[in-house]
Image (tube, rainbow, N blue to C red; front, side, top):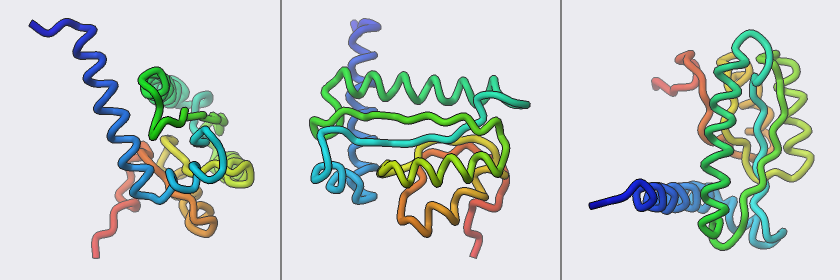
Length: 146
């Protein structure tokens, strides 16, 4: 019989593997390896403002997964370090936050919420060559239909 602890460890292991494969696929893990013993990720999200409850819940869930991955040994032996900046679902603040996160040498931007904010930060990230992983948005503009 599987216990809750066993399932949690299994889930943590699978999550760690998924994060590692995602970062390696983006080329981020090799960049992190040459720079430090941590994998620096950034997030801008609406954790305050009109949809603050939703953005806060997404960010807290993501942070819980990263803590679990770190507790299980990290990704390729490196701990994940997340810098979270609140944009309040304000598009201009989201762009400002992402520019700061890119300048601060985060290897990827993770999460984020709000269709307008996500649409606005993608060109900044494309120009900087920084991947965006796991955004939460509902508008179809993010999907390439051609």
